[in-house]
Length: 450
Image 1 (cartoon, helix red, strand yellow):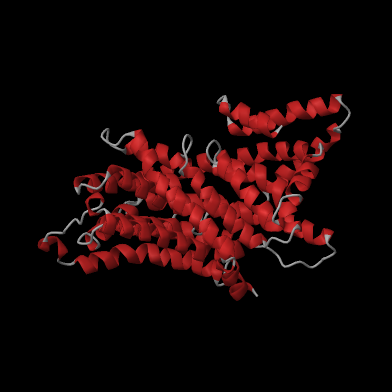
Image 2 (cartoon, rainbow, N blue to C red; image 1 turned 180 degrees about the horizontal axis):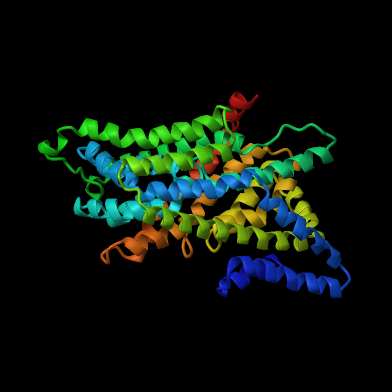
């Protein structure tokens, strides 16, 4: 069933309908063979209603709206231009500014497509004019744009936190613990904060390494003296709006002042205010932002609904028992089983989207991993870092497509593909760091919430 749905997806059918359609075909076969009860589908209505009335998931369209408004209000453009001037006199400085801006945009917007396209339109021509290696320039932009998947507020982490919360409660009750520590989205945000910074540090270290070993690939871009006048003021004015928004949104979540949904509401209003202040606000901008939000939200949730059908058939026909047996027999115990699951997700990232992977794999594998003693916060963060690579790996890496759409003809698709390889390797190193020091993901949540 698992391989059948991948085969259907490779034929080009829409993901949500591929998941539900394959499940219905296998469910029908199970009914004919007497191994599946059709009344199991009766639980779908309650599942869908539960998803639609889940207050935590209301944060998803709100964060998407916040990101779209910020992207259209010109804040990203202003940040890129001023940070590029600030670091221009350093070798690799332009690349470093792209990474830092990518991290700031990740913490204030979380919308990968918008970030990659914006940086591709503004930074890529500047880097090419400065004689940057096109492969390095492409890799930096694609990788930096995906930081929104792991640096809070990330929509992936919202879904993962909601799923892991329910799964962890079931696992702990099965173990006889009827008062387990809850797994909240806020705790997952806190857990992802330090690993996100580690990833940013690895990206910066790679650019510094390239600047030292191959200076021709990332030369300095000196800023004329007349443009440096008032640069500090420009940097402060460009940084203050997104930093205030980050403080309002993330600060209120991590400080326990607001839930993610409440903070997302504040962020949406804040984004509109910033658009007004920047004089970019208009009814056209608002209309485009609302339509883009509705489109993205609908796409995500229809995949979730299709995955619910898949999960019911897969689990009730014995799939979860097979997965449990497979993972518990892995050498290396819980760590070995987790490594296998992350490796499977990494491979699936070549052909599936991030949401598709978590909606299929997490409900099947997380119960086994949590039963084996894996910390749910650590698991959520490790999966988040791992799935960030799904945006970077060909043939279906969305960041690659986003950049290809705005890159000039001289930057070939092959250059973009080769440019992301070092950054995929850095992602794998980051996962290794998480395995070696799990406290990176578990320390901050314990400090803040215990």
